[in-house]
View 1 (cartoon, rainbow, N blue to C red):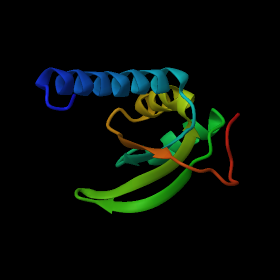
View 2 (cartoon, one colour):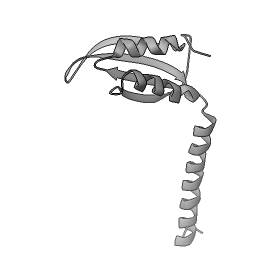
View 3 (tube, one colour):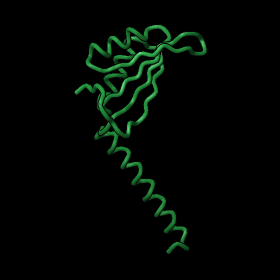
View 4 (cartoon, helix red, strand yellow):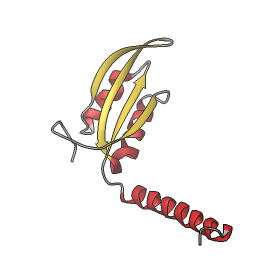
Length: 113
């Protein structure tokens, strides 16, 4: 009965709970890929080499930021490897700026197993 505020409230609570539970399950399963963009103003090449040494594919791009030149690193990894990559990056350059986005499809390229 859509005329009862209690029914509407119950529906909304169930819908919200389902979304939250779904997100928690997705995070735990860690399926899929994540694309990381790493910005480093001082140690970009060192970060890239550390990632490569650990078996990750990295593309380096020279860029210019607000305060001068930066190295932009592009790295796509399995979702379950994100914490490992983030640890490597922050060990090499604690001031690195990292963004992450979901990858919907993957075709060709280098992927660490």
